[in-house]
Length: 310
Image 1 (cartoon, rainbow, N blue to C red):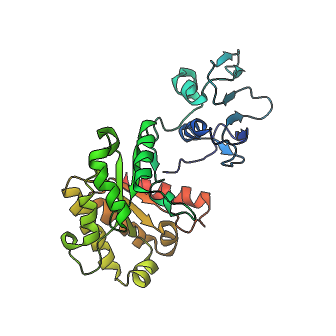
Image 2: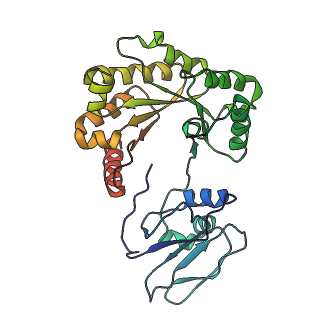
Image 3: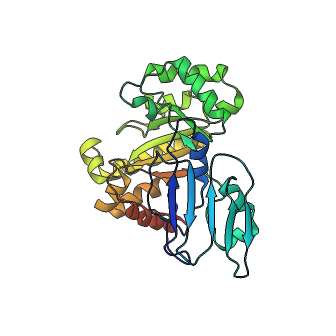
């Protein structure tokens, strides 16, 4: 869920990124995910620059915080103006700022981030990327070892390899890894009862605790791709989510083309969300499928959706 970027007391606050990205900088990446970004302006971002994060205010302001991937202590001094300066910058800024009681005056953001990894599903759809079932089992163990919360492991209803993975996972993966597995799929087909839909049954047979279900939320996609009516699509979403929830599954709903659909027909996009929530969905995932929505539009739309369901 995007974190709101806004300007308040820290107007002109900047985030600057340094140190070229390296393949060994995964720890820096997860540090980046945990950064509490509220009230910060982002000057520039590049996935190749994830090593060092530095926030500064304009001249005359003395607050300075940095983080790198090495671990040394950070010492901060407070002057008579209650301005805070950094005198040694080798500790994780996130941990220090969240534990420092003084930080509550100027650091606001989430205290926890859940990491949903889709390497084994979306990641294997890339050009020249291929992983055997043995490979996928090994990767799942490694992802679990560094505490990824959700491991989307494949689409059991789409190909034999993913079906084999979920079958073997029941006996070849440790319980702590199996509990993090997610099976991906779609809502039931038009004019097919949910309990008789083969793809839905493949999700059930995967025997994992969490299902990520992709649904249509753009009216054009519904009528031209699914060849269904708007009402049929809403019923397909509701039936599929409700059926899996009643079987004890945690259901995350991927709203495909959500932001384009919201722009085209706000009321219908919201109706798709309502249908999923009313059926028991645990999470709504708003997808910018075509990647053409500007960040400030995503922020505004997400804010409206969160407010609607508060």
